[in-house]
Length: 262
Ligand SMILES: [Zn+2]
Ligand SMILES: [Zn+2]
Image (tube, rainbow, N blue to C red; front, top):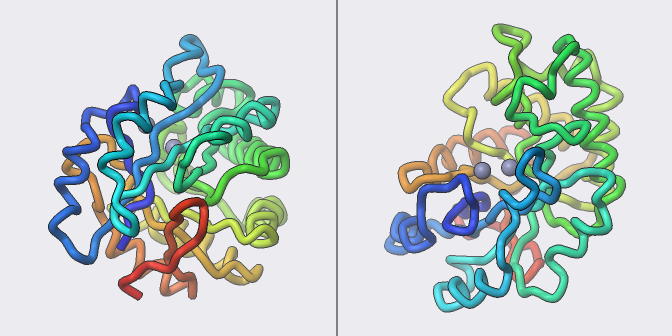
């Protein structure tokens, strides 16, 4: 199994070094990982917070790279108005993997309450999925789509309202997932919320929808920001993916590979 979502020293919100993450997988023959450092242009209030020195990244990480085992990637936070800049971030650098993510809505970080001001849960969800569609439409340079349920981590709605509602926005979800399927962009099963039965059901619903539209591949990623979370719940994510009929993959030199375990 390949942990395709790991944040280390070049992500300003991570408390682990690449050496510490590597220590979690290096002696496990069935495990591999790709580091995906954050890159988000125009982060509200602190525009440089999630920007790093790409030359320093490769100078430091290249010597740790191991084909099929430890790979070098980046997570690009997409915003529709930044598409050209976002797509240019990996250019000229030997990234193995570019993970496309939606962290922002109307230029506000989904992490903060301000992003949801004046919105009901259904309105917030509609805006989020429409933003994701606009990001996917406008961005051409990413390999997989990160944490589709990201908004559920932070929005202020709780109980049944705390989950995504596929049935209420089915056309929009089909549009988003259909665009990924068309371009053979795998869907990430992010394990962050998979300690929760409702979240598991959400991911199964989304996975089934994606597969029903013709999607075949997914990635599994822990989104670890500390060493205890590396590879966390990857087994469960793989089981859920299989239940949806999806095959977990990873990327090396921007090419898709099947997990060696399967
Ligand atoms: Zn982070
Ligand atoms: Zn992310």
